[in-house]
Image (tube, each protein chain N blue to C red):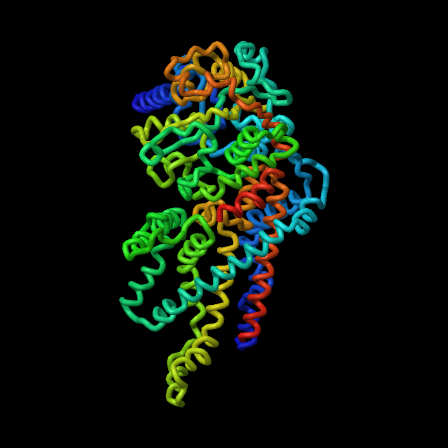
Length: 293
Length: 346
């Protein structure tokens, strides 16, 4: 039997096409996402165009009033601006606090590295609510920090709780594990030999850091900032507990409108605005990644 | 033979696993926490003991708005039968067709209800009355406050907590202060109340006391707070004298919880029986004794020492407040709060 004959006798196994493979692999998550995310978001969008009746009722009429009212009301514009600026500030602080830890972790090895990683991840095993209550004990007027300040002569201590300072401190700590893990995931390009080469050529440490380490770790910085920003702007429980009713952010306003005053259409409108902010953050992130690469 | 014995055994076990009678299950949607605990003991358990063919399943929610959300979601196929919620939210539910009317045909006890427990345009009827009070830490505040103006006392700067608008506590306090300062019609504006709240604002430690204002007063985090009488009295009992309750001379406002029959609920006959019991003299007396909500049944005969700790004897100082009409201007009052009150507390 010739080789050609053998070839024709064996039934040919047709490779699965790329399109079919993609459908097979992505199908389940696409279905889950469609049912559990896209559909509810679409419902929310529809709700934002329904009439809000006094006393929390829902009218059937289609209206643009929720949208026009929100984007022309100085209170809501200020709320959106304040939510974005506060979240950006918290993201920046989280980055500043997390970067050295992530860099040290990246360079450590063996059991020590494992131990440090467990330390970084362990706060995630505790609920954010519990950690926030922990901060209340530390930041209160008679809490740990003010007790120390008063011991060293401060008359009344400083106000750290039930204001924006408390929210910033609490959220920064809560977001740090996410930022550190994202930074570590993006530190793949960082190679110690490049730093050594720069030092050999006479670059001072600050220049090595600024010109070598920072650019090489930029993917991690971008990912960590995106994650922290999205989590900060959508966080609700920490601003609610540490803000003392003085810090108004989009997420707390959505809660008030949905749960307290029962204005579901307005809550839906504000929720869609948060989604728009998320979308803008994602566009910025993808452009930044393209610029980096 | 062995097989026959085995099958007989199975049949016997199956038969004994079910009660000898069929049991109707009534699902009650109402407040969680202390309310659930006390209502179960004072009303639900005696009702089930008297009606062994009916089981009450308590489905707790932290607030009326969440209850309304759940009922809206179930509208096409209701899985609950009865709800107890704030009357202003019950009005919204009524307008959306979620409830059946409760009248004398449902419960003979409806005729015994105080007129203020029945509301135009609300399908349900009042099942509890509560009122706004001051709560204070007896170690920090030695003399019981007698006026709402105690909230303006600069000696308590940073030592007062209360829920701010849009919560009912913030709105109610504003209306009381407005009334005290000569405000005539809160539906047309509460300028005097807002001006008075602006004087209170610098003393406020938090507008969001968590988990509630009462434990914060008990443990001394704050010295004075604003809360609701029923929970305040229960917390006073549990605090060994650290938390005390004061009803200021200028009066208070009532808050009413309405009991409602859910339209199309799965156990309608049993639900009507439960509503009838909840409005009865016995149930009203038991729940007032358990949690100091004033009864809505005028025939309820409550012990004097319990009545003294409810609003019943101070009804002449109650400031009339139409919660249903107020809900139309609640958002407007909230906006004024945010612009004129909150900034002064920063």
